[in-house]
Length: 315
Image 1 (cartoon, rainbow, N blue to C red):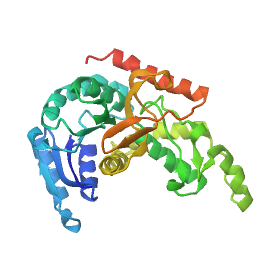
Image 2: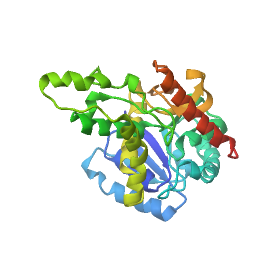
Image 3: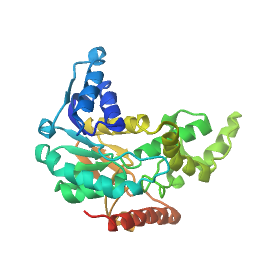
């Protein structure tokens, strides 16, 4: 299962991903690349000095050439989101950074699977797909994996049940137009809307979920973390490392990653998150689960919002 993984960007997110991977058995080699050579060398030194407690792993502060033969490349580079700033406001600056990175990394790692983490992630995934020249199956945006993790945590707290028993997802943009398709959400195989009534039979007092409050929690909790501590990086790193585990596994899994739409739900030429089959060969395809008309309308609205942003940027 061990893979060579290159991470572009040694900021809070990139370095935390590197650290998290160093404590797991997904990677046998990690290359961390950043324009700030002193910082990346410090991050690597700090991480590698704690690796005596695991199987041997090679960690390098490298250049693009060191990414050769990478199985997975994770792109986190970009200007950090500031308190009160939306992800969309970051767009053109981070697109320009991505445009400078792309030809360099693709030259040395043309066969890798690419995970795009830089925000706004759906726009960045779209741009990378368009300019990289790679097959679309190689390009995977982290999308709403983090949003889905936040949702499952929130529902776990509400229902007082382990997160592994909750199967609910966030679709659309990783941002303000995301939504929860409640029609496919379930707890222990029971539709979420029915679960509350069923557990009354075992004297479990659980109230119905306030759906508006829950999607607000999902959308706004990242901003709250940023307001409190200046950045988010633990949860997103855990989410990205989980995705690396999927890409390194022998079997395919479902994940709410961002990738190009080709007519699913009537949506074309934009990257948004829906349930997607992902595995060692990358994106295998969107899985068109049955949604209500209202949910499809929300997904289209999210896609349209992203298209408006894409129309304003220079590719």
